[in-house]
Length: 120
Image (cartoon, rainbow, N blue to C red; front, side, top):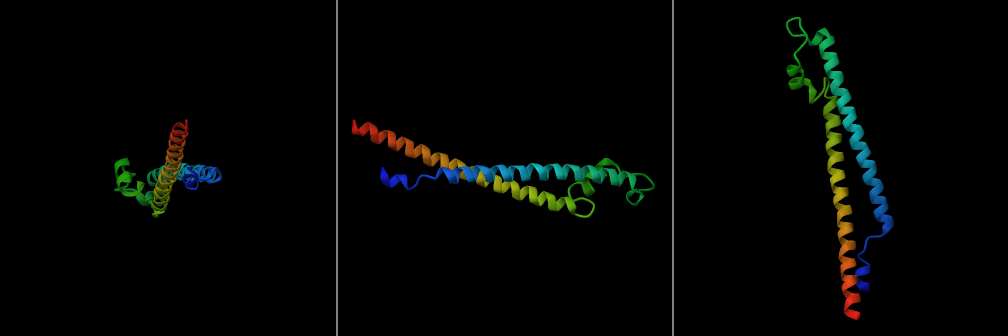
């Protein structure tokens, strides 16, 4: 069993990982809010600024959605969406890593219990 002990994750590493998960999750949530605010701004600008008018009228919501909602007026939302995607991938990776740590501890716990049972 002593050989298996060296494969156990250190609790300090687990706590650091949880802090990293918290940080990335916060970044993801803030990026999502930033995207939503910028999308709202796109709608405000396109219905108020005559440069975006079509035949003298503000563009329809469907036109704004299909034209600028995803990218933004100057590609600013695309960068935010890229950051959001990166946060999502990093968060999934970190959560999977934490899950593996838990599995490692569970395997150790099972083997340890089996070893104690075999001694008796």
